[in-house]
Length: 368
Image (tube, rainbow, N blue to C red):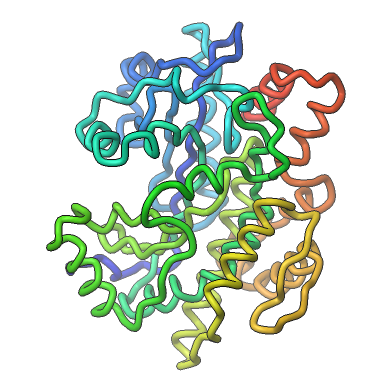
């Protein structure tokens, strides 16, 4: 398999999936083509997704979250201004609290129409929004080591980012409802481990040759190597309403990947974790967010999720400082003190039991 794991190391790119909403009704609206027609200057950075009510913004490769944040802030403002001129609004959360997937249209793009043709209901009901973080790695074997190592951090990132407590006008009892919805897809969740880049290439090649997938981008795992970009991509996180939370999470991902790269360069081996426990930790994070406990692998001890976050952040703070992303990493303190996005949505809802009020709050706090 060809790859671009050639450096520079630790460049960061961020993708945010945003919801397009009618400014009056606050319902999702199938308006991606209207938005794209008005944004030709942003081609490549504003993109369609599976459904016409979803819009993706993406940065170019940046040195740190400070640079990426400047791009994301401009892109949020551009899309919000363009939407407002058309009676629309832009919001960011893991799910729209009361939207129905049956009302959403699939974009007129071959990849997505083929996806619906292959997956049917599973693809049609995937009305969810995430944030993806790419970090550059300069060696293919190192990239596999990093992707394997990031598996243990997936639950922690999900607990911090959980931002989808409502689904189809229902309070689900989960803080990340996006997680079980996406779990219906094939080839998702905690990824397998790979022995080497050759092992990864051979296993992906087997699936391609068998006709199961077209290429590796149809592996939608929580973390994956991305050979075409030369990055390791972290995909587990719910979309964040507040931009500072997106950047805080991205700074953490970048620092964790730097830590794992240096772990590889020093010749160390990764600890072995039972898949079942990684998957259980992810469930606990989706259910309880920051308010629960996780098993502190590789031990069998349960610890408060907030305590685990604090310990990990303190451990990688030096990496964030070296990368120039330390200021944004401090945004995790706001999540720890005031709760993740899901907790904040629930506070708004409990005041009046009004999901439109929740959407209004999402739109307001999405403003860059």
